[in-house]
Image 1 (cartoon, each protein chain N blue to C red):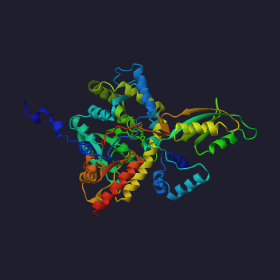
Image 2 (image 1 turned 90 degrees about the horizontal axis):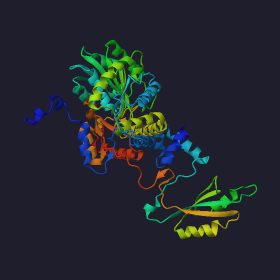
Image 3 (image 1 turned 30 degrees about the vertical axis):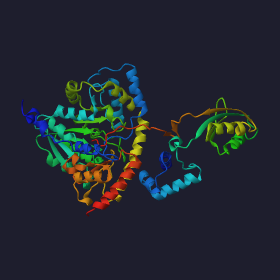
Image 4 (image 1 turned 180 degrees about the vertical axis):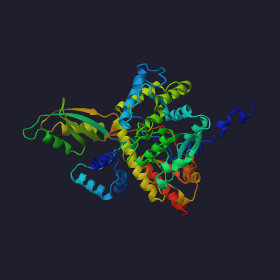
Amino acid sequence: MRPARERISPVVRSLPPSGIRRFFDLVAEMKGVVSLGVGEPDFVTPQHIRDMAMYSLEQGYTSYTSNYGILELREAISDYLEHFIGNVYDPRREILVTVGVSEAVDLALRAILEPGDEVIIPEPCYVSYKPCTVLAGGVPVVVSTTVQNGFQLTARDLEPHITERTKAILLCYPNNPTGATLSYENLEGIASIAAKHDLLVISDEIYGELTYSGRHVSIASFPDMQERTIVLNGFSKAHAMTGWRIGYAAGPSDIIAAMVKIHQYVALCAPITAQKAAREALLHGDHEKERMKNRYDERRRLIVRGLNEIGLACFEPKGAFYAFPSIAVTGMSSEEFAERLLQEEKVAVVPGNAFGQSGEGYVRCSYAASVDNILIALERMARFVERHRRI
Amino acid sequence: MLRKRLLEILQDSDRYTPAQLATMLGVTEEEVKATLKELEDSGVIIKYHAVIDWEKSGEEIVTALIEVKVTPQREVGFDDVARRIYLFPEVRSVFLISGDYDLSVVIEGKSMREVAFFVAEKLATIEHVQSTATHFVLKKYKQNGVIIGEPEQNHRLEVSP
């Protein structure tokens, strides 16, 4: 038999293990932990959506669907996008329903990349972007964002990283883990760079609905950008449907067709029950969506203020449900901070370096947690910081 | 808008300090205090109240819903009878309702016997009360918007991306 290390592809071997996975294992061993480490809503999917899923099962909807997803859902997505970002997509050719946005990221990268193509990714970033780029044969090119510019990618920071091999820019705003959104000016700047260098943009807008000040603006809505942008979105965050695994991609028909080619071989289609539920969420879920968003917004203000008060400087997140405070006052690395906070005070946060080196010196605190738990966590963190303050 | 959002939070829980409420709503503490005072003074907020699961506390409490038919009186309609009923400390709530009967009265007592006694001796004998029908509460599932017993769990992992 081949030696163990040769059985696994070198590309997969080259991927680092997820920082979140390691931390999850630590937390799983402990009891009584207050967790701010969770990247998903603390609400259960609204009842009417669950009812629709059960009803569809009762009606016998248990089969495969079109590779693209059921047409009624794609039509609902098309209407939604027209209203939400102002772009019109043909539901028959320009929208693909995927197994969560995670699959859509993978499909988009695999559909467009040739070996060695570079993808520009602002960091800190969601954990899968760089590995998915590598798995698709591409080369992730990281552009660090900093608290000084509100963790926003700017045209000025972006342009020096563009080479002849640059194929795409992968954006995620509102951002996981920082909660940053992109200002209109920055979006405009990035759009003009994309046009100037003929780049594609993969825009993960899964947190778009969770924008707390102003309205979400998609880069795809800028002039001439629809033809070079793949908008990714889904139901996990805004509709509290993480476990249903329904995402979608909307973009130029040739790219969507290429993504469908891969999708039909690896997933065939998203689960029909979840697709039926997702359509219900789009058609009748606004009220619940708004209610949950208001709750997140209240908690956002509370946690940001609380973190600042205990000395963990936190810029104001404008979207998603994460606060990303600096832990500089403790002089610890983000892993040390998270691990010791867990051991000493039983509060789980995610080390910032799980989201790339640019996240070092920060931790991610999810405020998709009850107000009571946020207050308890803040109290414990205050004790911890008081004990370990070095500056 | 501030009033509505403040009321929504308070209906959920009244445990937060004005400073915490101010932060949650993005306004000043003074604004919260002033709005709270206005809401209290104008009777919009009637009382801050805990929702208690007596079964868990070990105390025995019997709750009954009583349908009461009333002969309305000139000038005061049902109000006078309702007043006579709600002044009893055993009575937790009184509603005038449409339908087959007139007043819906919620009573709490230490035992079924005590409740039965109250209905027979005090409630049914009030002038203009025509009849009563008593329904004992066997189990409470939800009260004042709060799920009693096992609230729905979100089975999340402790850490996720």
